[in-house]
Length: 165
Image (cartoon, rainbow, N blue to C red):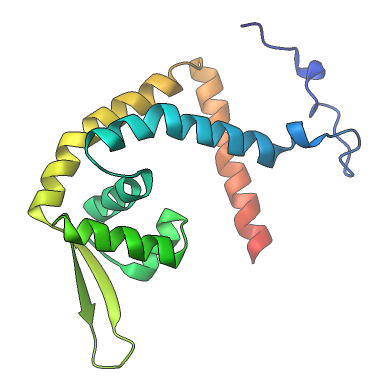
């Protein structure tokens, strides 16, 4: 696949008003399309293999990494809404993969989620497959493209965090 020269991209000579940008080349459109395609081709196959949805896999991985994490922190780290996280955790708890624990003496107890031995075992089995599939997609890019993409995504992440304040 031949890549266009820098000045052939719709973003090269971009002015502050976005003159000439059409919705099909909006960064939000392209990121959404690529994100969905990556989920379908990379994450869904191994999540399905282990009987998990993509959301369940993401949450299980975050809990496995932390060992124990507050529900509120899990919502933030997963970038999902509270309702989705709550539903997915209940399903994971029902399968014995995580344990939910309420702490505190007030009516609004703080909820924590901990990985169970079964959850740890499933994660240990799935994570090498996840890493290999992620690496395969990243290796479709040349090393300098991977580096540039990583830096660009982090910069956009920082831009969004500052804009949300």
